[in-house]
Image (cartoon, rainbow, N blue to C red; front, top):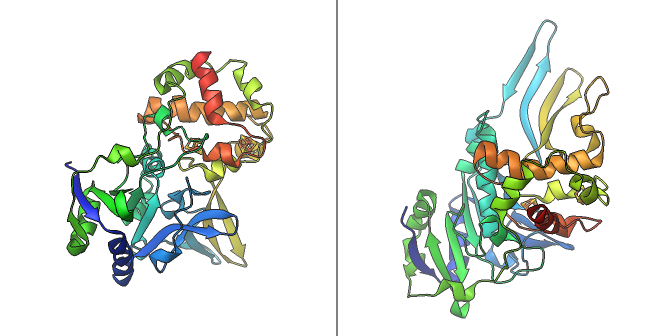
Amino acid sequence: MDIEKKLLRKSSLSTLVNNMRADGKTVFAPTKQNTQIAFTPISSLEEMTEDYIVTNQSPKSVAFPKTEKLLNYQVTQFDITNEGVNPREFPEVVVLGARPCDAAGFESLTAIFTWDYHDFLYTERLKKTVLIGISCAQKDDYCFCTSVKGSPGSTRGSDILLTKVDNGDYLAEIITEKGKSLAGQYPALFEDAPEVDKEKYLARVPVKFDVDTVVQKSGGMFESDIWLEQSFRCIGCGACAYVCPTCACFDIQDESAGSKGQRLRCWDSCGFKLFTIHTSGHNPREVQSQRWRQRVLHKFSYMPDRLNVTGCIGCGRCGRACPVDMNLSEHLVNIAQA
Ligand code: SF4
Ligand code: SF4
């Protein structure tokens, strides 16, 4: 699909937010929440912060909420009735300010949620979501998007990608049909774009490893000692999974009150000991090194093999959030060199 290039002035972005809200869309953007930066609904552009490399939590919860109701149930004398969720009630959402890595993360999530089972809750939510990404002008040492075939200005996954150019205005790359449809609703705001060298405005993220080598080598490393060496520090807290834009582990829990209740899908992590424990008490991933191996191999061997995508887009959140400073990119460099 041809990418259309337009100029979105700083003042027009503010008007765009107001207009989208007036048209019934919920606009999520990065906002300061105490010490964290999180995607929250905004009522005006002034609430959005620009002071972030990536947000602490990724925007994945707009399509895959941390806790999501699957159905209500009612136990009667001889039966159980249930009532599912109606996707028509899902809100129209715009995510403003997702980084290119976050947008690419939705491609990995979609691959998971449409593989052996078509998860209509996820796909219906995503259908109603427009991603307006903002390219990265800054990076830190945890960023490694360029090592996993991304870049600070990649259009992959975004519906519209904004890159801040001179005077605080934005180059708007309108990428998908969803992006075109949204921009088409507000044509006066998207002006003809001047010739712009986009690269000039982007952060420079060095390539740390060759991902194809990691994919190729890790597939043969199931029995390697490297997992034990790498996971010595890991305390199995699960923080890495909870901040990750591509992690999709969940469990299902029933919350009952008398004869009624609701069935909930809740984020979970393959880093937790309880995640794989069987009713018999047997746990196929008894120790942390097995759980670390699962995390790395799922992202860099099983997903490329089955879904043709990696399960990591190099946002670096797992390293920033880890209480014992497990830096995934360093471990991937070691795997590439093994
Ligand atoms: S594994 Fe880490 S670096 Fe990769 S996408 Fe998840 S949080 Fe980001
Ligand atoms: S955040 Fe760090 S310590 Fe916690 S599970 Fe992940 S790698 Fe292990």
